[in-house]
Image 1 (cartoon, rainbow, N blue to C red):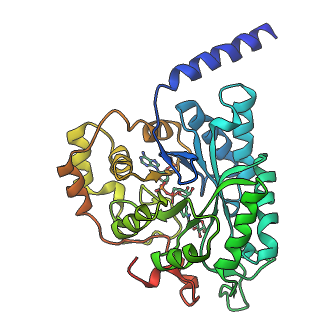
Image 2: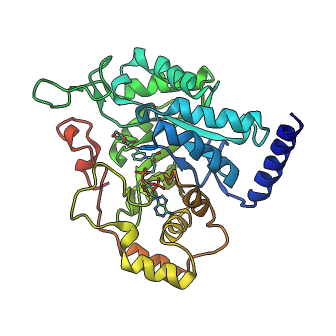
Length: 335
Ligand SMILES: NC(=O)C1=CN([C@@H]2O[C@H](COP(=O)(O)OP(=O)(O)OC[C@H]3O[C@@H](n4cnc5c(N)ncnc54)[C@H](OP(=O)(O)O)[C@@H]3O)[C@@H](O)[C@H]2O)C=CC1
Ligand SMILES: O=C1CO[C@H](CO)[C@@H](O)[C@@H]1O
């Protein structure tokens, strides 16, 4: 018992000594703050993600990016619970995001979907609840409902009706803030006209191969903070096709990384946060989890930033082509 207590005390001392990194935050228009680096959890196997969350919190992460669709929210919640029980963090130190999946857009399903994620995560509230996509899928069935020919079965629920129930989630105290993911500027503009609670955040695919300058400027001009998903180019994505360029292998990024004495991943993340946006790199590897948050001891020069800007090729990996025919498919317009 004594050994166990000593071991816990030692581990807490060791952990707190590891948290030397100060992570800046973005402030939402409603006053809540989101740390600019968060841990992504898509594709993190349930058996790996609890350890990844523990390693991330030990490394100084206070922001976790989750979604019902990722099928691992209960294991993420286990990791959080462990660190809270150990006294390393308190719930209110953490910024936790979840997302409403496409099969729950029908207004009567939204609040219960949010409560389901809360129950899986073991939380009383999330900090941010995002509408994962603007288009909806057939309700109440598989997360990816398909017909006999293997085509996705879509639903025509309007995201404005869904948003009203996202607002209810705020009023019920289930989430501090609500936001959007994978929406284009026209869809956001349409939503802003009638929204009673404004979207605090837009989460979009963003990295040096898909710089999203116009959409970022659009959001920032309307007081919406932006989060970059797939910042590393999602090298483990099922949607990455043979022949597509691999961001982390880019020779120009290697050149900058070599010159500034950082890894390519760190350069990419620094490039993103220097634009006033946040990023949610996914990793289940302890050394990379640590690496990805240690980006606050160097700066990229304007020349480096412009050089990296020039790598843009509007390369979208997470384009969800199967919904291209939906009236709310977001990627048929420039931004
Ligand atoms: N809103 C949305 O629609 C979407 C949201 N997301 C969110 O964004 C997160 C991140 O995006 P994701 O698509 O997962 O991809 P990322 O761009 O974060 O890439 C993840 C991959 O990069 C590897 N990696 C991480 N850090 C490094 C590093 N420093 N050096 C080398 N390799 C590294 C990881 O390996 P390993 O794990 O083996 O260490 C993993 O294979 C998701 O996990 C999810 O939370 C993602 C897609 C869509
Ligand atoms: O976050 C994401 C990753 O997983 C989902 C399902 O494959 C994507 O659609 C989504 O945008």
